[in-house]
Structures are given as structure tokens and as C-alpha cells.
Image 1: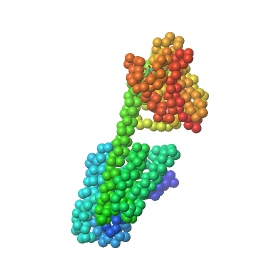
Image 2 (image 1 turned 60 degrees about the horizontal axis):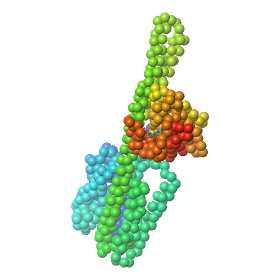
Image 3 (image 1 turned 135 degrees about the vertical axis):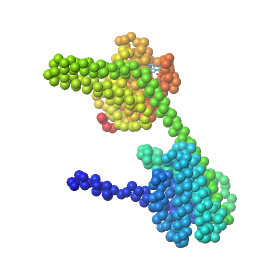
Image 4 (image 1 turned 45 degrees about the vertical axis):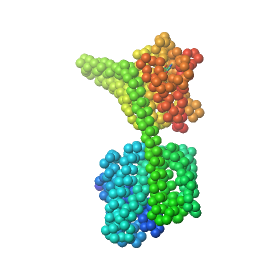
Length: 551
Ligand code: ADP
């Protein structure tokens, strides 16, 4: 075996099995979560006020395929044993709790899978509602019945069955509410490739979280001598939670809520804050109910806002696509004409080749030249079809570094047939060297195409000699400009009106092209303006931020 064939085999052998990292993460995560849960115990009350390991396990199951669940549950066992044995609990009880903890994760994840395909999305009210009903309600309720029954069967402790049920239920429901959405939201954020955030955004997040922690510590973790707590104290974190919901969406809220919960629980287990009643059970219950009732509406609010903006985004993208397809429909005559040219050339060349084969079969050089022409004509037709197919497709926004001149040339070649049939002369005045821009190729091509078609429409009544359309590219400091200039009548209304949706002066017009073009350019950090020119005609000016690189 030589070195080349040996290397991949060795690499494969050295590569850790795919389950190893997730299993390790679950084992360690479960252990840390269990220790945290123990630290959140209200003494001498024996049950934790927030028990996160089960919720962590549930989230891990939701992120994996059903066939992998068994080894994830198994991976939690060492973490569970390591955490529980330190607390001096008999082994049978430790194993009993492992079974009931796993049952909670399994019940939650299986129920959720019945109603939601794949990982539940926190920008969907339906998914989030089902997540709350299954993971934060049904799973803790059903597993608590099992857990309390096991504890009574084994005979551990002195609490009655219903005492056990009520104490475990709230701590597990609260944990599911805090931990499951937190893990799902961060996993989705990481999977989407962490969005680049500007410095100001990080500063805002830091201000939000430090403000929230400070307010929560002041409200819920300071000595309280007064038996009566002003109701305003409970609302103190609300402005920060609303800030998180409105500015940072579900990810902000699912991160802010655990911060509030930890500060509140920490205060309560240290005998601080407003949650002090006669018995530890009642204290724990009051605090848990406060955290649960504060969290659910805020989470739903953030999800509702995220869902609305997702739906808006989707319909804008649908509309953009529809308007592009409508524009391509208008160009179809010209495109057919454009395709006809290479096809005619191919036919003529093929006939010429037949002729040479019949009459002068020895002329190999001429035949090879003819074949070369056929190849070139075929490539030309293929290019037009490729460009057209890309424009027709409806896809996600894909940003990349683009050469502005190439964008213009591609659009010009797509519109070439239409311009020729309308008798319009297109004059490209492209800067010799331009910096690149960053953006979605298809969307920016759509903008330029729309401006070219509008300019051609505007010149339809002009004398043939005046039907001149100039596309001009240039760079100024940090900016790239693409200007589409025509010799039509210009416009008499204020230029902003042209960009309003449904404003059209054409009998068959939709009045959407310019408004969509403007929002595409704005989404690229640029501007689209319209001006009437002194000598007659209109100019549409695109300005986009330039990248440092040149193509
Ligand atoms: P549509 O082309 O369907 O009318 P647009 O949003 O693309 O929709 O254009 C809106 C209106 O702006 C046009 O109907 C026309 O009145 C005006 N307009 C656009 N481009 C030009 C131009 N180059 N010259 C004069 N008017 C224009």
C-alpha cells in the first residue's frame, strides 16, 4: 500500500466516532446542570427550585434524530451518577431518578415530534406553542407522576405522593421553560452561521444584560425586612425583557429569561428578596410561579414579532420574484430573438459542413473552423439560457463579492434582443477599473434590468435617433455608482412618487418595479434615486458601498 492510499485510511481510523462529541457534551452538560440544580435547593426543602438536567437532555433529543436517542440517554448516566452519588442518595434511588429524568426527556421529545417535523422553530408561534405544551407542560406533568411513584415505592424520604408531585412539577416545568428554548435558539443561531453583528449591537446587548442583572439583583436578591413588597418591584425587569424581545427577538428573550431566573433563585435560596413566606415549599412555589408567568408571555411576544417579520420577509421575497418573472415575461420576445441568432448560425454552419463533406471531403481545416463556429454559437445560446434560468429561479438571498461592470454586462446581454427589436441603442460607459461590491447577484441584476426596461419604455415614443440608453459605471470614495440614463420625456411628478408601490403610468404596468428595486438597493446598504435631466430624459442613479478589493 503506498502513502496515498494509506493516509485516508489512517485519518478515518483516527477520526473520533460521530457520537463521541455529542455524548461527551451531554454527559458533562448533564453533570453541570445537576450540580446547578442542587445549588438551587431551598434548605431544608429537599427538592431543587429549578432542575435543568432533564430539560437539557430533552433539548439534546430534539436536536438529534430519533435513532440516536438511546445513546444520548445513555451518555447522561455517568453525569447523573457522578452528580447524585455526591449527595449521599442510595443507589436504587439514583437509578430511579435517572429513569424518571429520562422519561421526561423522552415524553417531551416524542410528543413534540408527533406535531412538529424537525427541530421546532422559535420564529413560529405554532412550533413554540407546541414546544411549551409538550416540553414545559406535558413532559414535566407525566414524568412527575412516574417520579413520585418511584420515590414512594423505593421509600426515600418522608414526603407524601402529592407533595412530591407538586414540588417536582414546578421546578421541572420552570427548567424546561428556561433551558429548552435557550438551547434550541442558540443551536439555530450557530447552525445559520452566526450573523455578523456590528460593535454597537454588541454594546447594546451588553448594556441590556448588565442592566437586567443589576435590576434583578436589586429587586430579588437584596435583604427584605418588610413583609409587604411593593408590586412595582416585580415589574422592575419588564423594561429590559421587552427590550430583549423587541430588539433581539427570541434569541434575546431566551437568553434574558434564564439570567433573570438565576438572579431571582440565587437571591431566594440565600434568604434574600421578596419571596419569603412561612414554609420553603410556599416560597419556592411563589417564586417559580412568578418566573413562569413572566416568561411565557414574553417568549410568545418575541416569537410573534419574529414570526411577523419572517412572514414579511417571505412575502417580500415572493413579490420580488414575481415581479422579476413578470419582467422576464415582457422580455421573452427579445430573448427568443436573441436565441434565434446563434441557432440560425448553428444551422447555417452545419449546412455548410454538410456541403463541404459532400463536395470537398479533404478540407479538414475548413471543417474544423466551421465546427469551432458551431461551438461558439452554442455557447452563446447556452449563456443566455443560463442567465435566464438563474433569474427565473426563486432562491434565498446569497451575498457574494461582485464586479459591478460584469453585472451590467450580464444584464445588457439579457436585454440585448429586446433592445434591438425596439430599436434602442445601448451605450455602455463602464469605468475601466471598479472596486467590487457585496450583494446578491440576481437581485442587483433585477434592479438594473428593471431600470433598463423602464428607460426603453420611456423612449418608445422618441424619434429613432433619440432612442439612446446609456449605462454608466464609476467609483467615488468608498462608493460604486451605476447610472441608467435615457432620452425619454423624464417625469413631472416628485421623484419619490415613482418609488411608491403601485404607482404606474403604463396601461399594463404593475407599478412595483421601482419600489422593489429601491428596497433591494436599500437592503444592500445603498441608495436609488431618480432625476430628470436638463436636456430631457431621466437618470436613475444606484449608489452602493464599495468593497476594498478590485476584481
Ligand atoms: P411599472 O414599470 O410597472 O409602471 P415601475 O415601478 O417600474 O412600474 O415604474 C413606475 C413608474 O415610474 C412608471 O410607470 C413610469 O411612470 C415611471 N418611470 C419609471 N422609469 C421611468 C423613466 N426612465 N422615465 C420616465 N418615467 C419613468
